[in-house]
Every structure is written in C-alpha cells, then in structure tokens.
Length: 305
Image (tube, rainbow, N blue to C red):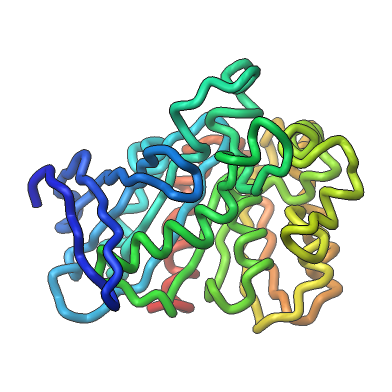
C-alpha cells in the first residue's frame, strides 16, 4: 500500500487514515493505522489484519478486539497469534488502543489502572477527563465508521472480543447495542466493575464518586457500564457469549473479575446464552489467551462467516 494518506469513500463520506506499518502474515497483511479522532480529540492508532481474502470483491466479516490495562494496539498483534485463525476464516480484525494519547492531565500517568492505557471503555463525565476520555463512543461509534469508510467489510457481520478490561468493554458494547454485534467473545473479563477495586477506582475517577450515578448516567440509559447489571436488563436479539477464565488467575482470587456474578445474571435472562468455561491451571496472561484463541475464532465464525 505505501505509507500515505488513504481517503476511500463510502456513501460519499471520507474518513482519512494513515498507514503506520505493514507486514505480510498468513497470506494477509497485519497493519497499523492512525487517524485523527473527533471523539477523543487526538491521534489514535489501531491494528488492522486484512486476511488473504481482502483482495476479493466480497465484503468480509469483522472482529473488534479490545485489550486490557496498560496495553496499546501492539499487545494483541504481537502476542496472541490470532492472525492464523482470522486468515483461515477470512475475517478482518480491528484492535484499537486502550485510551486517548498525548495529554498530560494531573494523575494521568501515575498508575497502571487509571488514565493512560486504562480508558475503561466508558464516556467520562468528570473533569478533566470528560472531553477526551470517551472510549465507549469511540469503540462503538467512531471506529466502526472509520473502518467501514476504508475497508471492504460487511458491518452487519460484526463480532466483538476482549481481554480483562477489554473483556469488560466488549461485554458492555454488545449488551448496550443489541444486534450490533452477532456474538461476544471474552477472556478473563472484568465482569462486575462497580463491585471490584479496579472498576470502583476507574468509575470514581471518570464518572464521579456517586456510585448510584455509575448505574444511571444521564447520557446513557439503564445501569450504564457494568455488564452484570446490563445483562439483567438486556432485551435484544439472542446474544451468544463465550467466556474463558483461568483458574489460577491471581485477579480472579483477588475479586477483580467476578465472572460468577455475570454468570448468575445471564442465567436469569433467556436472551443471553453464556458459555462460561473455567480453564484449569491457566493464569491471566497471553499464554492463556493464545491457548484458546482458535476456539474463540471458531465460535465467532459460526455467527459472522
């Protein structure tokens, strides 16, 4: 392609993106692009795997993957091995960064679990975060528009996946947008953030100290950014969720993840089919993720390919 500005038009609307890097991989192309985000008001990077089938005229299904705390777009690209399975199934895979970049707000870079690299996929309502830390709208709104403007994808055939904080992001994206994603695949997600230390810290900083407001933000209806609560009220099309959790995950034992709470909520909602698999001996890292990546792509392929 060459490192240049791309301005492809879909229905008369251009969303320019810049190619940062490109490598051939499993017959396809693993790329990184950047663009100017109007939602986040900064330059954002995202990974984009184009399978070998991308040269055909047929529009391809798309998978979004959201990463966890401290990650950039590089972690999933370099560590997970997903490209083999995306190439097999002919899926375009998009994975964004985990927060806005280029700001120096007070406290933004002081801890691994808040601020840079820890956007938590919410739309902040508190100063100084509310103008830029709007990752929910970026992931569910602006990024899909950028993708559809520049790549030959079938937006009707979309799935969303994620790990840890990104698993939380994938769950709320799927649950708060019925029908937008045909299925949801998660690894060790933060499943009940309003009840765990990570989530409580992030929600207090981004959404304010009033815990009730986290579940009833005026910008978005119905119990907000906690998958355990949104699962209870989900009324959309049947949603299939695959959740893998390592039994030796230290954050599971520290009560940061609470997948059992999500499982209980889903068991009481006939519109959600959660396949919760406890994987014995695995921890929270990418060795765990890569061990079950093929399963997750096979699962998503059943719904979008």
